[in-house]
Image 1 (cartoon, rainbow, N blue to C red):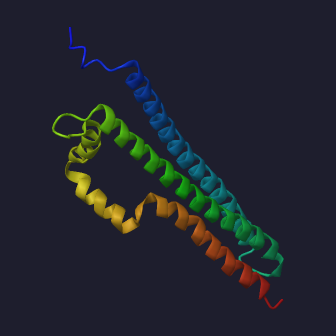
Image 2 (cartoon, one colour; image 1 turned 90 degrees about the vertical axis):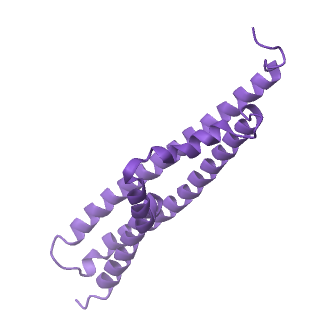
Image 3 (tube, helix red, strand yellow; image 1 turned 180 degrees about the horizontal axis):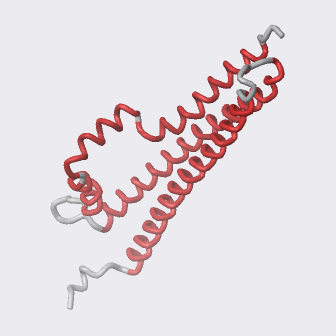
Length: 173
């Protein structure tokens, strides 16, 4: 049998369960935010593709295309704003989850040398990246990461829709 002093109290068990539940909830919310943002962006890209196809159907942009260009502009603007706001929510929940994990680690898994076991597992994950890890980090730096990509795509469509609207409104016919 173990030493009674090593046994966690009922209060410590409850605290650990509550913190762990909070951590899991934050991670679940983070995944849900990412899924929701990606789904909304994909639907907006589908709508934008259909609108651009209809606008370019007659192989020219003229005054009759301005309503569709305006709809494209509004859809792409709100998609860009939506992606930015969800990126903020994602980052906030991810930071909170990291803070909760660090708190769990410090309270319940800290050993006598001050080594945090959960943080060590998380930090040690980089050792398992294998030989492609450095290349993937370079690619990530070059592309600015997927979060920036999901903001740039609707942003580029917004700029394109501005140009299309200007073209449609300045058509001489």
